[in-house]
Length: 272
Image: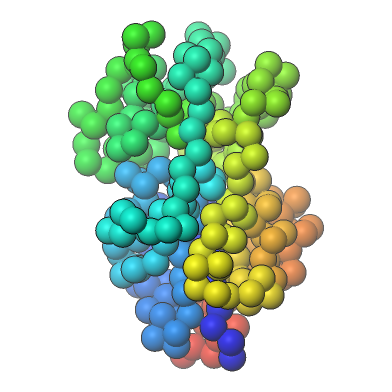
C-alpha cells in the first residue's frame, strides 16, 4: 500500500464525548505510524488546546489549527511549508461588539499563545488546559492581529443566527466555520482560509499525491478537507452535508471509537 496522509479532525472525530482519546485510538494511530503512514491533526482548535492530544498520540508531524489559518510543525520553527493567516485589529474590535448580543456567551480572540475573552465563561472543559488564569480580559486598547475570533452560543440554532449576521456584515473579509459541542462555536478567520489549505501543504511536504490523502471529520469546518481528500470519510455522527460529500461513513460514532475502528479495518490493523 502507498504511503498515506491521514488527516484527522479532533472534536467529534478523534475525541470522544469526554474530549479525551481512548486507548484503542492511540493504539491504531501508533500502528499506522509504524506502517509508515503520516498522521496529522487538522482542527479548528488553537494549538494551546490541541497540543496535549498531539502529545497523547505521540505525533511528530505538522499540525493545522484554527481551521486552516495556521499550519506549522511543532518544534520546527523554520519549517519551510508553514504559514499563518491573520485577521485585522480593526475587524477584531468590530467583532467583539457581538458580546452584547443575548445569543452570545463568550467572544474570544486568539493571539499567538494568548487568548483574550469578553467574560469568565468557559465554553468547554479544556478551553483553558493550563488553567483559567491563561485568559486575559479583552479591552478596546488591545493592539494585535488575531488568528481567529470565536463566538460561543448556547445552541446550534443561535449559532446559525450569529453566523448569518457576520456574513451579512463582513462576508467578503472573513471565512466562517462552525463546530458543535456543549457550546457551539462560530469561528471567524481570514478570507480564503479552510482546512484543505493546510492538508495540501502537508501532503506537498511529504510528497504524497492527493489520491493518497485520507481525511476524517464530522462538522461544517471539515467540508473542504473531506472534499479535497482522495478518500474523505464522514463520522457516523457527522452532519448530513458532510455525509453527502464523503466517500465513506464510519460504522461507529466518535464515542464508539469510530475513527479507530474504521482505520483499523481499512489498514488491516488487529484490534486489541
